[in-house]
Image: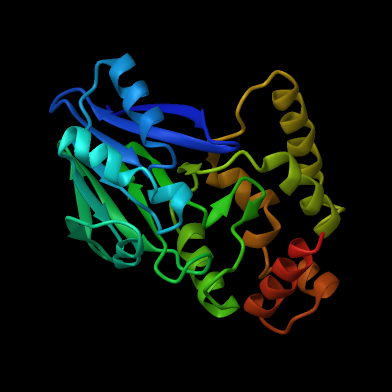
Length: 251
């Protein structure tokens, strides 16, 4: 069984260290703060052996160089990360990577950035999704287009419903306000928002989130539903998604 250590870093990022106690390998999922990752790994007594980047933004790959210099680890990433960091192994949709005997499938989730990827560890029922999807939200569409982004979200929707989604930021309360605006009659969403408020009042994280719940409450994953299409317009799910994303950008 993999051990996942989650910790807060920068202003609102989460860092993740994935450790296999059998092989003693440890993977950094993205590197928003290299010093924080090395400090957390040292506190756990873990040796960093790999970095798995989801996309090129500095709050996801900015610590690569420092960690590589200190540990000699292998950097695995989509080609776009070469904008800010050398890569040891370039990966794309359909490839696999391993930590010990645990295999992760690479999923194309482009839209936030064109080459964004996610890592799905099916046997462990977890996926590291970066900024492609959040609890009750999704990333801004900086480089992609609505059709590409919606296709990415469909790939996430197709994962087993019990999959825990490890997204990279604590944006959930802000996302919840827009979700209620987008889908005000959703009773499951109303219950979820109350729970989120309670958890944040106790200073507890809202990440990870279970895909099963996001499928019932996250408006960006529900853009194919007739009630949302009627409310927001769009003859296709991608068009409805585009309207939702534009509304969130100015909300």
